[in-house]
Image (cartoon, rainbow, N blue to C red; front, top):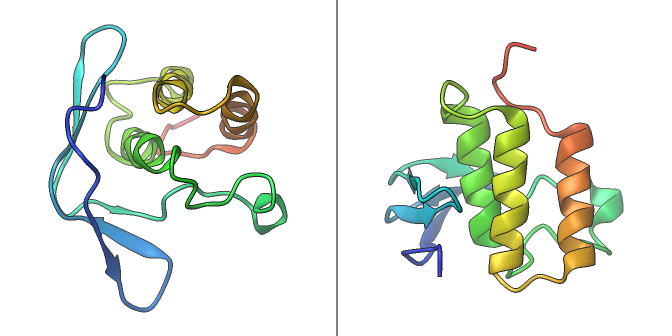
Length: 120
């Protein structure tokens, strides 16, 4: 299994933000080790409120992939393109056992609306 650790989060008071409490490790299909460090802050899946009925923002199979995806979007733009980060998200969703259709819908949403720290 590509996730090498469990996701341990603590809630940051005053909002919808969570802090990583132990490193989250993921190995992608190219065998690159991605490590989300302790202290990294995430909002989990940034799903528009309108879509929560289809994809709840705290969907169990999306939690770890969403944190890795957030980290790639905010701190790894020098190493990964947006397309690559989105592909890793899709693969991680599938590896977590999410159905192909729901994983594709989430992937399509980030391809269309995902915003990171890329200059373009």
